[in-house]
Length: 306
Image 1 (spheres, rainbow, N blue to C red):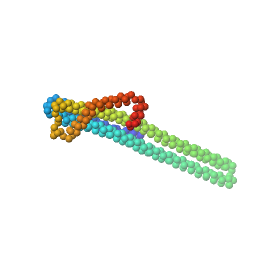
Image 2 (cartoon, rainbow, N blue to C red):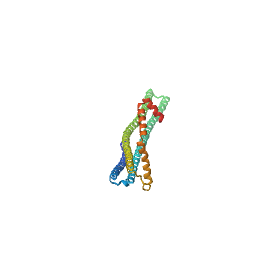
Image 3 (cartoon, rainbow, N blue to C red):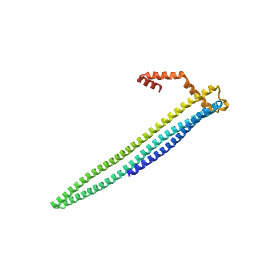
Image 4 (cartoon, rainbow, N blue to C red):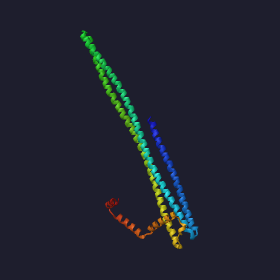
């Protein structure tokens, strides 16, 4: 029976893990498709820079830059969804395992209590039978004494009474031993069930922790790829601005839609921050001064800013 419910629990956990693996594989395939699309767009943009006329280069570059930005945001959204699905699956598996363990332990306890009650009922019936025999022998002893029975008969009756008392004591001892054995068996069975469930839960938690660490590593890789793509977009915008300054031309207002204008303004601000020498110098000075601080000063500074 233990193997049956254990296999059922493990089967449910394995089904859930297989569903997670399938969803993760689907998201990984979508991520690979997005990566190939980004690479294709980058190659198209490079060929467009090499082959397009200089008079119409700016509008096409802005559109391609907007597409790359949208693809990067899609990849980031997929990474967040994968992390949320992993956390929900971990919580569901742990709650299902805890409920199954509680129901199994409750059923085992009820079964053992029923067996203990049956044994106590049998012992009680035997004790009542012995007491009834003792009362009958006592009555017979009194009648024999009244009727002037012989000494041999009185001796036999006395021996029978002592035998009955000895049987009563033995039955009492057997009752106590049976109660102790039932209680010890109940404790051993519950302890073995809890130990087995604890070991299985510990193994399952370790497996889920490994899967979670793998997911975190994958999310870190995706985040690094997003950061690299963002830096490449800023560099690409710098090249576009260089081409615009070289040609001494600007984009016509009617040739750019609102989304492209917003993307251009955002990358323009980031490019200007990136090219600001005073901001770079300020960041370098802060990092240098922070590195010169002592450990307890760093800890106090972290507490102040948190």
